[in-house]
Image (tube, rainbow over all chains, first blue to last red; front, top):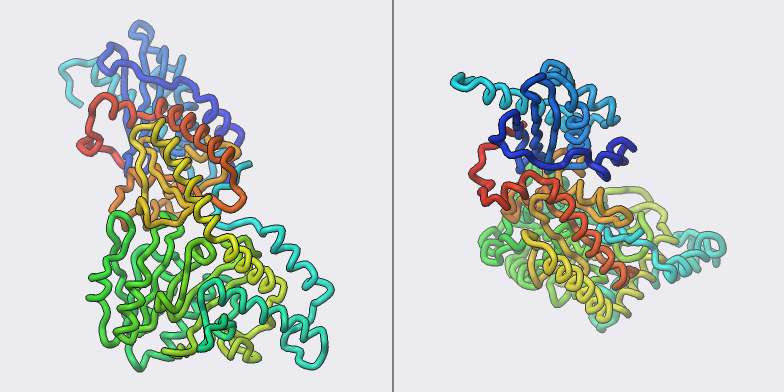
Length: 132
Length: 408
């Protein structure tokens, strides 16, 4: 199987690799997947608490090239979006943008999941005292 | 490009190709044509190849001469394995319906065994230890009076572990059980002697030994014991009735020549490949932490190195090794999304199986290629670990086995 140019581009030059301290204010962290399944994504957002806009995003991924590309693309798309806009990102958008073959669709699902988990984590931390 | 996938297939040696060429155009006859020179030339060529193959595997007649009569030509090792297993099952089922094999066989054997199970045979799949070795005592215990055949892979195609076929052959002979060895990876790579090892059937592939694809052979013992086989393919009664069909003369000439070259160069090549393999292993392990050898440290194919690079998924590593052809036990490289069943059989966790890479070093690889491969692997593993959340957690002292993952 050959990779699309988009996947190769993100794999060769991944955007926004790195980590924020988990406990820093404004940071939301989503970790999805499992080592036994061959995919673990960690996706983090940093929200500007004045505007409610995602000011920065970072990722680290253990997984195939398509998983790395999906999470790299997700961080690119997240920056500058409000949380509602971010929640509107669908795995099918990622599939389309990266031209993922059917066997790699789960990589995009994982990325969508990581976005939701990161936002959920941020929201939980932003509203102290409330358990989700 | 650097080709390090020599367990999958090998290029045809130019000397093999040269030997084959006249048989496409000049000597194109059918070996079964007994009444003219075209047929005679072709027949002479396929008989010469039989002897070349017999010599390499130590098949000898009562006078100690290479015994070409014990070689049956096939389309490849998959057909040879099918013929050995189904052919024995069909003719010996009245004696018993039990077979023994191992958990780390090639699919050609496992799928054929599954087929036989659907037809009333019972198959024992022996486990292997963490190095991939079958326990000889467990093998002995599995042999029963109704065990008609045992089939064992000599050198495993993924992890390279070499079984002690002499010991297993001895046990089979004592039990009156026929012994088939899948030697697709070992013929011409390590010493083989069907008599010393008490092997009754042995499967051979052309394209794994710098010969052409689409040709193989099955060694079938003729004496002590004489092995009988029911054919898979009927029509014309070629190959002592065990495999009909006009012989693939060019392929057979290539297979014979490939065997002759392998025999002449065997000792020197074992040393050279072992040195290259150890060089690659040394360079990688000196530069990287958390890398693991899969398979046996010493009882292994000279050209095989299989390693797990913890925290780096195998497919992504291969993607970074641009210009270098290897393969991985990772699920992501297969349609099934299951990691390698061979690594699983060794007790290697799925997490490490996903990070495995198989380097298959062959005749045409050079020291410079090995050094370049080590350099690229080290560079890419470091790059991908910087990108890996698992490596980050590991460095933070988190025990990954205690983490509650949210698997899909």
